Image (cartoon, rainbow, N blue to C red; front, side, top):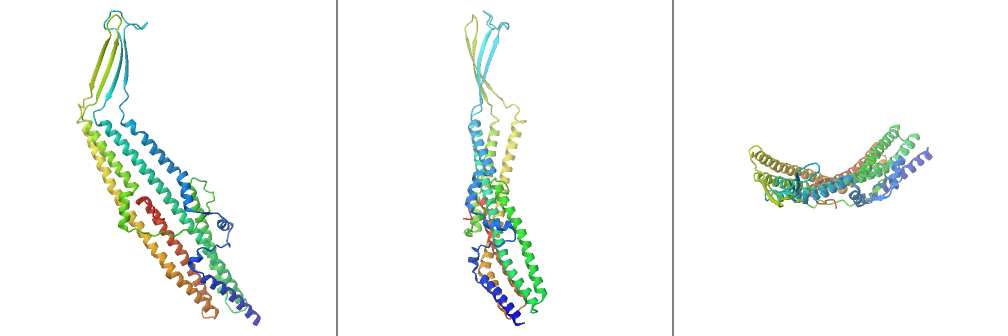
Length: 442
């Protein structure tokens, strides 16, 4: 009996020493610890992958993402249309033959028989071409802002997927660490039960908690594959391409107030810039519709070749009269006014939506930032101390095995929530970047 008691005490001492070593690690240092014990080959492989940084992924996405490339091609196309929009219409060349058909010949001495060569050029009313050129220019500028918006949206989505992958990897490490600890607890509980100093319920409780951790690891592994697939999608890779293990990063700081972020959005938001360019385009469209009340002109020059008669020359001038302006030009002006008003209202709606999104992102970021500070400075140290106390009390028989398990599980949950809050903070900043038009996560 003494030998059994000595064996139990020795095992308990070894386990409690492991617990104390685990608890004595500072939380900052624990972020850098790598754990090799995995439940499955997939989690083992994740720890052996190369370290990948966010900057590397951003650079690859900027070079390969199809949406970014498509937006750039649209910009190029719109820029190519600026010069044609403000260029005169193509001239007409005419040829008339008045005379015999077979063979084609002129009637000698007949003044009405001639070969006529002519050229006509349509000239829009002054100002029309300039307005068309301005419309094409603002359309090209709007597409440039669309390209900027697309680029920022892709990078923001990539950052969020990267932070999700980082969270999953950290969660796997923490769960595996606690799994090892619970396995030690299970052995102690089983040994004490065998020598009659414990109850079977302690063994079963440890096994239940281990099963929960195995289930959690399976879910985390699934989330890891989803995050990697999202990253590969944004980088235009096959879904199964290995991504690598996210590198450690320094948590960003929210250095701007809500009012400052709102002002940044008003000045830099690509979405608002697109809306402003659309308002400009429709303003020019209204001015162009008003100029349709004025006539366009056509000028021509004609040369007549005649057989046996002097050559003749002619000039021509035509004007298109807006005779039915109440049925054509006036409705077009009314439509242009409505389009302009619609664009202005759309900008107001976009501004309101942007203000809401900034408020939402700012609230999530500030709340997550407070939680990160709370977990790191108070809750986790307190939970660590609680685990120390539970270990010491269990050693002398003042607390039961269930209390020890609860203290260990509580510390696990708090460490996971710390990283979840830090991830939510980084993702909130990334979500606001396409809105405010500046980088907030660096």
